[in-house]
Length: 161
Length: 131
Image: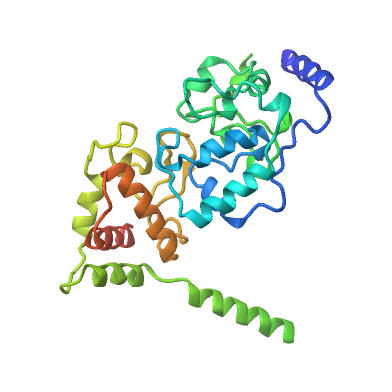
């Protein structure tokens, strides 16, 4: 526990304020939560660049191993929103693995650094399932809140350390 | 008082928009034509069938478990999926557009083709009678 507190202190020292808040912009079309939030939480648009989102939205029928095809009108409404709310710089770097693979916000340098104290066993836990399952541990992820105090890890991985 | 009646009006019009599982199932049966009669037994067989088209999602039960009354888990993302059966989740089978959207998406992914209106009618009949 002491180690976590130390880590948290170190993280706060190097990150700007409000790093735990990734709110969904208020001008999101209703389809954003309904469609993008169907199989995973509606991810914060700021964690990928506009170019990344364009690529994601151009291949929804082959969406990370699933078919997430939308009608054209819905796809455009969501795509426009993602592009105008997209991020840039530090939080989006490293999200592209290359080889034509789709960008993943869960492999950016920022995401990895923020999760580097999560043990390997936690990522393999069935109750968590994948790095895209933010709400498995971040109890208020759907509200865009990722504070350390809101963490509820299913296996108690953090408190065991 | 005026305020109250307005609320009542909104509540009534909201209820008018929602449909029952029976209405949604009947619409699919009518679309199949030929006086199609849906059966829950065929829907149950469809739900349990292993299609083995998609590697990660070979069957409905991959994500939805063996019982539509239970919460499931998305095979790729791990996100919790609310139960499919209206008995466990009253939002299910109430919005025809939503029902059709998920049939379209999941039939293509799991079954490997679009489902027929008759298959959808059977599936709805099955979910509606799960207890």
